[in-house]
Length: 141
Image 1 (cartoon, rainbow, N blue to C red):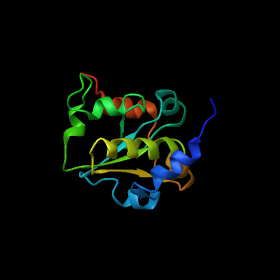
Image 2 (tube, rainbow, N blue to C red; image 1 turned 135 degrees about the vertical axis):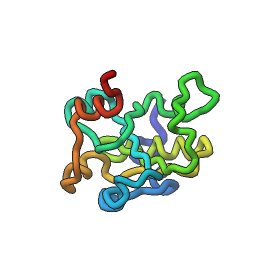
Image 3 (spheres, helix red, strand yellow; image 1 turned 120 degrees about the vertical axis):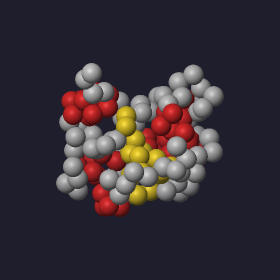
Image 4 (cartoon, helix red, strand yellow; image 1 turned 30 degrees about the vertical axis):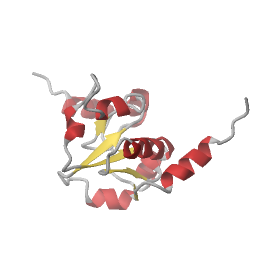
């Protein structure tokens, strides 16, 4: 059966319906407690490339389950309606689709970073190593 709508068309359609922030816009809000940045990349990408300081990792394959309060995998951080959740991936394609999926679920406080982590690094924005990310998220007791 032939593909009738390609991945690029899906990303373009999603992008037309979601909020996209530039790296500069997020840098201005990096320490704002009302903004939670979400890295949806695979853990292997984080290990290899690092991540955005202060972010939470929510793998793309689990995102909808972590956001849904009725799911056994729900993560309470996503229940904070006073925060804006800003997603990113490697190039901005997965995060565009993920942001659209969360909007389809009813979230209104969700956006993504255009160009993803690739653009983040290209702009010279700060990067946290995976080791530092894990230590921050899971401090030793």
